[in-house]
Amino acid sequence: MRRSDETAGITGFDAVRLWNRYERGNTESLETLIRYNTEDVVNLEKIIQMTHPRMIECEMKCCKKEPDILKASRPIQQHSKF
Image 1 (cartoon, one colour):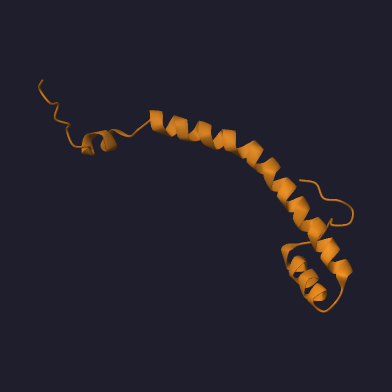
Image 2 (cartoon, one colour):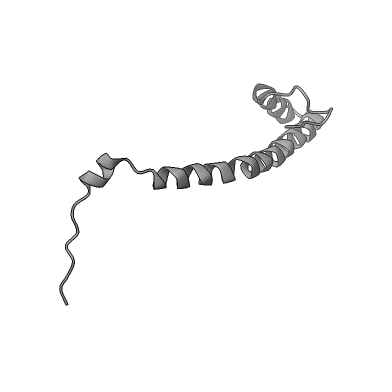
């Protein structure tokens, strides 16, 4: 994932420091923190777009390959007679 030059190298720990500086009156720290958090949100969206289809595919494969032990442990369903 990409970061801007302004936020490259900033970590979550640094984000806490930026917030603390802002609380002590440093408005520039808040601007940097907002840029950092905005980039996090954009990057998370990209991660979701990459991983969600894979997760769905994996779940579909898992459902098709249900272990025999699970099939055997299900109660037998009684069918009503009409």
